[in-house]
Image (cartoon, rainbow, N blue to C red; front, side, top):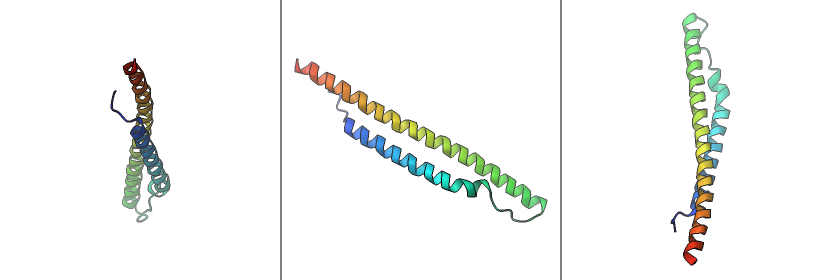
Amino acid sequence: MMDVDPIMLAAQSASEAAGTAVQTGMLTGAAPAMANPATMGIDEVSVAIRAAIAAHSANFLTEAGLGAAQRAAFATQVGTSGVAYAVFNGLTAAELAL
């Protein structure tokens, strides 16, 4: 037998999916405030600083969103691996029973 527990992989997949949901929820909640920072003044330097902060925030949100998508893909892959191990563990057990 392969000695890989499909139930544990299913639990890990569910845990990663829940973590992904929390992560994307946090990003969704924080995005409006991060995308529209307050201006510190009306002079051109304050406006430039605000633009730089907004650009940095947009970059962060994009990268964090990609990270969440990768985590979701990982959760799916772990779940798929669990199913594959369950099938092959069953086939191996049947073969050994012969």
